[in-house]
Image (cartoon, rainbow, N blue to C red; front, side, top):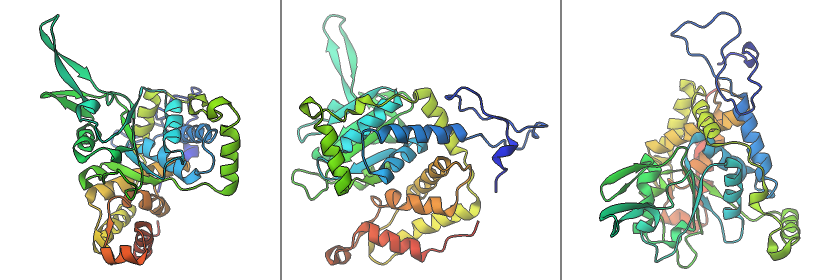
Length: 354
């Protein structure tokens, strides 16, 4: 499907130079696209993973999903019971990211203006001044987003979709790259408000953080308590491996990964099957199929490939779909969950041989 990487010139010596290189030999015709060299993006993903794993033990799949979402340029919904390291993981990623970082602790009394900002009249200058909220950053951590009511949650909709914020009729752009990591406690917990479907659909992935193994939990407890105040695993202690410009270029190159029509067809058939599968009361929309291909491209890059295979689609399906579909009441009573139904759906849709 793709030319062998050996046909390309060696990459630049600069480890942060992610620019595409041209094939060795005669230049390609003007109408022939030149496949980018993605080895530096693969290396970047490996470096991010290595740094996060210094302070987050286990959770290998979760870390890979977070990195894939970063390369795909999407937002992530992190769910897990309190105390499992959701915020810790995002803070660790922020430390490797090197961009501006903002954090919002959602509470029931939070107002939308606490997120976006507001205008106020300045008596000294006799003019209205705009006070920008914490959403104006590169990486926003919306901690326990479902502790706030729907009106406050909805304040993030515009910036997540359009990367801009409207304050008193004035549209203000946020600085690229912009990514929102929202953590939430399971909705069965007291004092939580389910996110509206329109906002859930804006998250490219829903990542579940589960309990660690016995050995991992012992390691976490030992290392956290090794320093005063339980600061033994400080997420700010990880090394910065990239800057904002590097992330933007990595996202651009990830988007150039090739997807043959057969693989796109597979992604769309999987998406459409969620709308008619037995036990599903709500299926994924077209944005789900788009997100599926975007995340699959990121997985391909992380594996060192410049083309997507059906296994990339399968790997991305659970985190991409689980917040976009709903199970029927009778299935929920039986004890089956969304992931169980999605696995059955994937088995029912044949994968192409490419």
